[in-house]
Length: 355
Image 1 (spheres, rainbow, N blue to C red):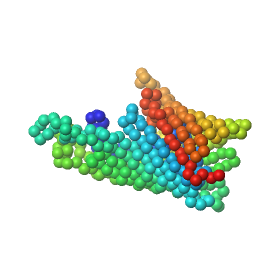
Image 2 (image 1 turned 30 degrees about the horizontal axis):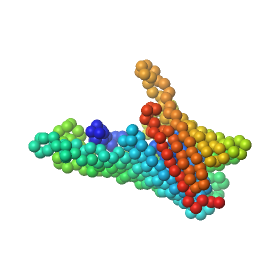
Image 3 (image 1 turned 180 degrees about the horizontal axis):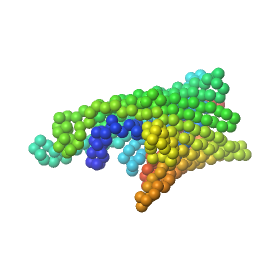
Image 4 (image 1 turned 90 degrees about the vertical axis):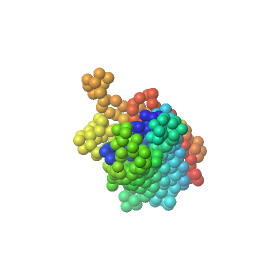
């Protein structure tokens, strides 16, 4: 755990330069259904989790009020990720929702005061702290009567990131999305951080802590501004029904970033694009099996002589019974290692469902 603490201090010193992957906890995803489909979901989402994936699709919600819950653990339980979402139909043309996300590492040892004023090691001086990322998404969606088949939505994001008593950041941003139906096809676009999401970091160390950092060769971080640049996700989906009871849903998403070259299959100096594929098999709209391919990257082979294409496969399942939907996914947050896959469960509850 000491390594985790010192790693956090190193990260603090470089926050102002890490803007390409700013607020990455907001890209993990919510809902085991989506994670089982490798996050290829923006066109087919139609429940409370749409507040995160595509707020315009909240208008496809079938119940007056929906409640969504998820808990996941990563890195052998060191990091915990939680989601709570609620959405409610306002009238025939509009709906609103709120999503709360927390990604955190708790009980990190603080060894800055390990040595007492006399130069002796005193383990009783070790305290603990948490490093947490918290986001609140306020969603609103509305139909446009003059544009047949078009749904529009947006998110206002409030972000609070905290590393114990040492660093705190507040951030704000806006997402915008649209969904369009054409015959049996559904198309969606999700523009994230359209104005740029700004995180203002402030740091606080005591004089003794500053002295310890300097004595160990660490820089003392200064207040800084972190910017999350806009990104655009495009998606299309279609559901095929067989003999009334069986269905097959297929979806493809294109995740586009504009913050420079990334390690994706398609990339330029200004723009990078990662495709994601999702598949869902359903029986009587009660039992579902899912799979997805994502995190498609170019990486060096074991001999470092050439590049190969790597990808991550996720799988999942779900069951819907009356007002409850329970989903499961075996997913990772992106390192392509089967050893680090996590078992994720999420629950959706329909409150005052439509008859």
